[in-house]
Length: 282
Image (cartoon, rainbow, N blue to C red; front, side, top):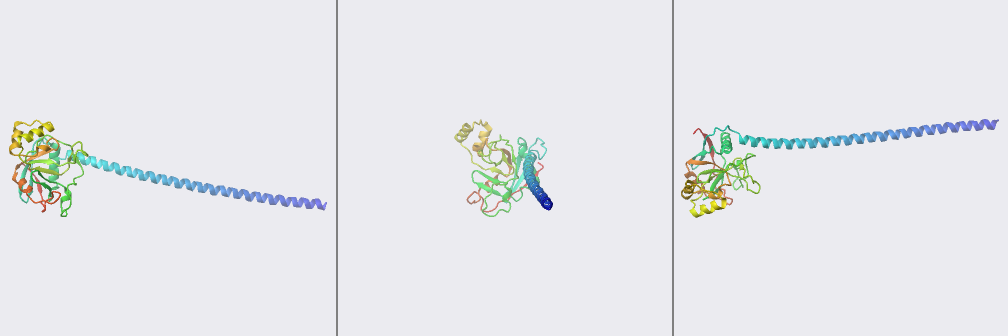
């Protein structure tokens, strides 16, 4: 009897211990599961935040790129229609230390005419340099980087940030004002620089020279054009490749004076030659 009671008591104690161990094991398992769940949730949240940050960065980059492209397109569009075209020739004055030149801007080149007038009215050209001079060929200016440029600094790569569609047709007679541009390899459409220009000095052509140029470029020169190249001179070899958008009508001798200055390597004058440009009423 006593043995049976003792056995029952031991069995009861064992049962209680087993139940307690099972309960602890269950709690431990649930605790581990909870910790794992928290870790997984945190990991997923971190991944979500990282993905969101990446997407936001990409979106910001795309927006910045789109804004930059829109700005360039807007600038190009502005250059093409900065001044309402009245269908008439316009006149500007380009002043130098040697004197002033009166320049007619051709109505046949409305985009270049409007752009040059816009920049002149803004004072864009004032105090810029004629930074490249080749005697017997041309004098070039209009690079905004030339203002206050250090002696010896290489110039010729600056501009307002846009190009102008080519308006090729007029010839390169002496005194022509023409748009500078990048070469055909990177600029097959022959688009003009937004601000840089050159004034033609050139030399009188012989009949044989002009005939060879005409044959090579498939150009038919009129009798008047031939006469001008033979007497006044110019750079016929540039015809059909650059936009000529005007002509010096007074003070053409200033080009000869500019072209006669001493230059350093790279064709930059040893002494700075500044310009002032203003729009004339007539």
